[in-house]
Length: 89
Image (cartoon, rainbow, N blue to C red; front, side):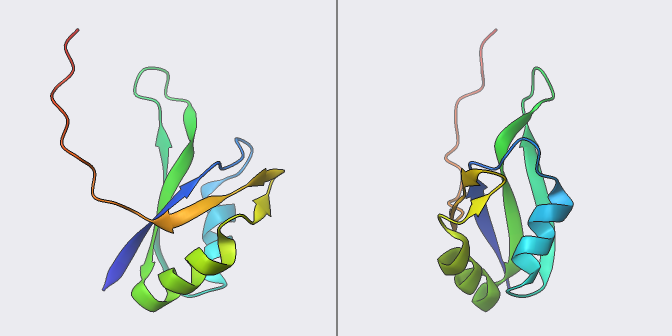
């Protein structure tokens, strides 16, 4: 079963392919998704990588705190997002 990993503090110059290649060292990467700001469309500096459970555990241990693009990655198991009330404009 695939496991979702939160990857934070990603350098703004990094690409999804670079992150995919980094995580692929630990197992097959199912998907990589960078999160963009809803208003501006700009990358927000974090994303999610989905991979096999054992590979995910290994990647989290190996890559948390690893410097990539001059920034120390924050890597941990993704938590279910809490439901939030709809935004009022």
